[in-house]
Length: 265
Image 1 (tube, helix red, strand yellow):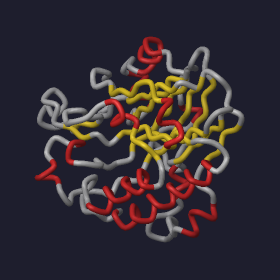
Image 2 (spheres, rainbow, N blue to C red; image 1 turned 120 degrees about the horizontal axis):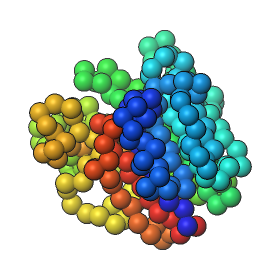
Image 3 (cartoon, helix red, strand yellow; image 1 turned 60 degrees about the vertical axis):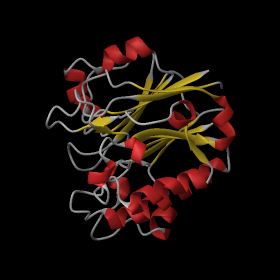
């Protein structure tokens, strides 16, 4: 059995200082913990995680983006970033957006039974200035996941920066067309589903009210006015191995909360 967690910590140093991350690991004892938006270089991350190996893929820009994997068992291999040919084919690099691999957004680890990928998807931004990038990023990331899937089933998780359906945010009508809920971003997520990946949370839970991110304004979290933008998706061949999938809104320390899947592997 594998219990896999994912959490956008919005700064790993901050969540450690708030004494939120280590107690969470101790209480949940994840087999694998995927992190996004670590906002730190490896040498800046204080302490160690007893009983775990840790792998970090940091952004070149200080205090920005970055991903990590904390694992009880050592992976067979760890791969940083998107392959260069995929970046070039889908034109997700250029003068306007720079190189996505300099932002530390994708980190993959191979295990005996599956590939695991943690991903921090680019935000479209309030003015939608990165929406064009999203229309390139989502298919590029999908192409990478499908390439890995040629070898073995894939589990990918992280902050995908989109609410897939109206059930995935508290106020869909007023947010339609805004960042995180544009037709383009939602279609990008739907393409994952159409290509053979399932949203594990929706295998176990239906309806609204389940959110993973809340604004810091207007007491949004206490009022549960949020968005579900953090996911764990698995190859459809693993769907019958999903024992449980959950969200942990009571875990504080970030504007996001952790999500998890338990696989019978």
